[in-house]
Image (cartoon, rainbow, N blue to C red; front, top):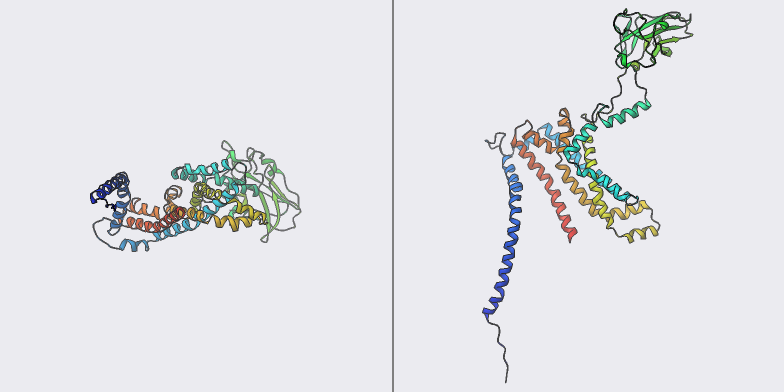
Amino acid sequence: MAVTTSAPAPAAVSRDVNPRRRAQRRKRNIAVLFVLPALLLLGALVVYPVLFSLGRSLFDASGDRFVGGENYAEIFRDPATLKAIRNSTIWVVVAPVLLTGLGLVLAVLTEKVRWATAFKLVLFLPMAVSFLAAGIIFRLAYEQDPNRGVLNAVVVGVHDAFNDRSAYPTARARENQGLTGDAGGAYRTGDTVRPGQSVSLGFVGVAPDKMPADARPARSAAAAPPAGDAVGGVVYLDFTPGGGGTAGKVDPAEKGLPGMTVEAVRDGRVAATATTAKDGSFNFPALQAGSYTVRLPGENFAAPYEGVSWLGPALVTPAVIGAYLWIWTGFSMVLIGAGLAALPRDTLEAARMDGATEWQIFRKITVPLLAPVLTVVFVTLVINVMKVFDLVYIIAPGPVQEEAGVLATRMWLVSFGGGNNQGLGSALSVLLLLLVVPAMVFNVRRFRGSGK
């Protein structure tokens, strides 16, 4: 007797499939429910502003007249905007390269130091500081006045350690007393002198509290006649404390100006040089017969060295990039250090056993193996520097804002910082978006490739 099996009824199949489909549909609906708030925020905060900016960039400053691509053409006609594009290019070329290089070097070196964790922590701490606070810190550090700016205080200290600074930067010759100004801030006597004669050179403009502590009364020096073959004299402060005294004459209470360089000049050449004593006296012994002019060189009155103009037009962009490096070096070092920790140690040890030097290992093994990490760090920094705004706006003073401006600051200034041209500002924002998007796409693809 044959046994036959019958196929399951269609109704049973539908009963099995429908619950499965309903479960999948329920999961999909739950997923959409959870994603919907994020999509709404993304649309409100990203998609809508992008579309609005794109549309606004096609209208004039008032927003009433359609101008098409005129705002985009204006970008490449405006000198200030072209300067911002140039500065943004400098940022993109310089900052990511330096940060990636510094991060790589520091990540490799910290592997070889005992207190690596503490060292990484110190370098990473600036990441906890906001760009606003960092901008204020560096604005003060870059101050031109050495009494306020720490960088110029260091620069001036080093400079003055190797170069003598003038003791009398504010001194000037008293008028109508026989001294005339010369080239380079020097002073010379209007009348010539001969051996056996003396001169009294009076100056004003030196505050009593700025006088050297070892200065002595100048009257005795003025009273002492030089030898027959010498020219002498005194350089003194022609001012009597409390008032009184006679202009052009050495009074009892008036002090000499020690440490000044004095020259005896004949026929345009320096015949002798002397330095004033504590009472301001000087002496040129054993001079040949003839007429001489007494000159005080300009270095006696040179203004003190004020340091480097960090925030001047020439250095403001490198100065702001320096502040950016201080903040982001720790970020670069930590990311590259994480990639370095994942390298196969057996490869490095095998290279050492084969006799490779540390430099060869670094150049031919470490760097090639870290290439994917270095690329991600570099592209991430490129995206970040394209959008830099806070540091430039805070650190650069008003007179050099245009010299330091980048696309983000130019966009803000044109739109809200006095330009009141939202049409041109929207065009700049669209340009900035177009420049950032390719780097973002590249980075996303790199992440997806590393995930696979």
